[in-house]
Amino acid sequence: MRRIFLFITCLAAMDAFTQPHAIGHQSSVNRFNQGEELSFELGYGWFALGKAQLVVADELHQYEQAECYKVDISGRTTGILGAFSKVDDTWGGFVDVNSMLPLHAYADLNEGKYQRKEDIIYDHEEGLITVDMIKKHRQRPIIKHEFEGELYDLISGYLKVRNIDFGVLEKGDTVRFPAFYDGIFYDFGLLYDGQEKVKSEVGKLTAHRVIPIIPENKIFPGTNPIIAWISADANQLPLKVEADMFFGHAYVELTGYKNIKYGPDFKQ
Image (tube, rainbow, N blue to C red):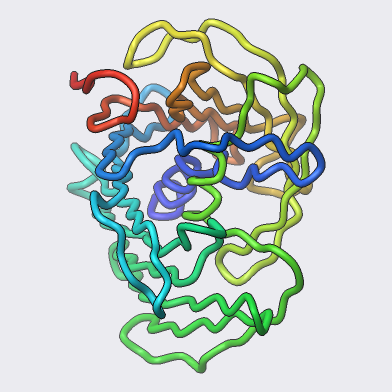
């Protein structure tokens, strides 16, 4: 059960890795807002398993003399599941305001008996990633990875996707993007599948439908196993993500938001 919750929590930012290299349409003004808070429900089938929250700090932070956005994603089990398998996870990071590239990422995962803390440093000049990890209260050897060119992670990718101008894309457009997550380099793709009306917890809205193109794997089997909907408005909020996984159908859905850039707060 711990793994199920971890997978669907990550779905909340799955559409984050969508920085389009081939097309490259980016808004000149940020669509996300400092101080913004988004709330999500995580579920499996008919059951709600937990809640997640994404917060952009209301002030800029300094990291290694660079001005940065600070973003945190947290997820926890609730209800009956929480009584049997408690999960309390946090991912966060500092993203350079000018380049929108990740500088420092961190995680604190507490999932029953499984515990892990890690710090990841991105040196873009040297093309080097340094991973410092404590797992099950034991310090693990520091791991270094080399890379070339631009590289995004979970947090920086999320901010990047909020600034994509989906309105200029046509149905069938495909983009590619490099990403690093959990010690692995990915070459994901994204298929833009047009607009449609979608019923969500924050209302019935017109949304951009996007389909991540992922390598064949055992976790997400079948054709187009993940679909995400992003609001087709000035905020481009992640409304919903659905995934057919090896254990069944999982979802992440936006349930509330406040301090968004355009429009009032929404609370259930």
